[in-house]
Image (cartoon, rainbow, N blue to C red; front, side, top):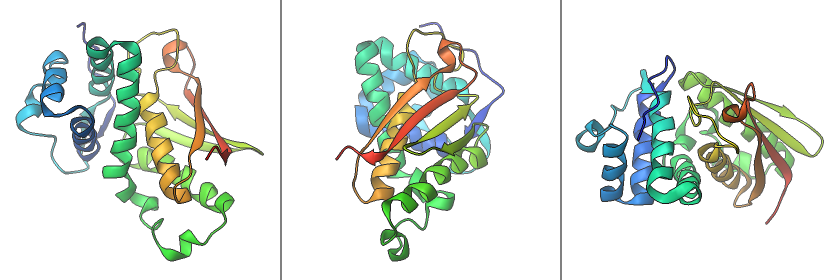
Length: 210
């Protein structure tokens, strides 16, 4: 597999560690080891990134892991695993970050759904802006939110005919399920940098689908 060169952008080591742990849960240890070998990240088989907030886990690692998943499982299977990895990443670690820490408090649980979303969606964006080189922000509209990602790792250095932000969709799906108390929301990537867009754009419907 041709690897994507390293970039000047990084996630915190803790985020990288959590993503690898999430992939192991989704794929199993042996399959993750195969993926790490394919993407020349075998060093993480014996020792995961350290549990700290230093920005040392390169964006290209994420792009190569996503590309490797497609190599091993085909485009559809790889994207499905990226989606599941994103959901697991949030469920197993990201929800402990920053502004989402109070979501489990009773005072938050009794808020109207619209208020929960108005607080929760921007809080997710702030986590990435604060703890990585990925700038994310949110715009609210009447029936949806638009979630923007600038300098995206998921398609870093790649070109494609369709969006590649499945890990982000998984993170957002699981985050909104947690914030809302178990509801699911339609989330669609409508612009992707791999297709020539200036930034990744995700549309999040305000009305739950179930």
